[in-house]
Image (tube, rainbow, N blue to C red):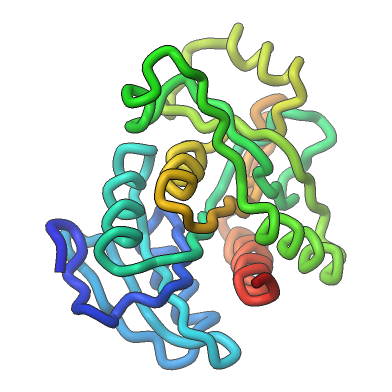
Length: 236
């Protein structure tokens, strides 16, 4: 048990899927896992452990933003022995060829700041995904014929951004989408020598203002969860 996670020793699997929304964690666990058991509900941040194809999996919420994710990822890694952490979340497209419902696999992340920023001082550390997870996720998406993009993304520390000039430069430099957590997850994974990947569903488009209707979100998010699970257990 930690300050933020009430799970007992052994309750958390080595493979953890990390949605931001705790209710999405519950939905994913009940939809994809066999015999899911609630292992955490401290501060309403739900975590479940069950099995997928005979493999133990935990699906645990992280909240919104890098500071919140940093708390849960640190504790899952350091106190519960998580070895593979895959963010499953939504993102906003920054390129015209990236469409609503598409999947983005974040190869690398850019950010203005994260909870880890201060330890690097003047260094611009470049956090990247685990290549084994990345390649396995791409193969899983290809098998399912799901439109998928691989490349750099932007992890923002603000939701209501008022920097149109920054968005212009991100688009110019072929950044695929924006979300709020992956940069810190990848940095922590590098620090603790574990595997990490962000599998993202495009839920809205920054350029066209199109958004995924609420009644279609679960089906699209289901593709993302399936890709993440297949990737976690098809690499060494």
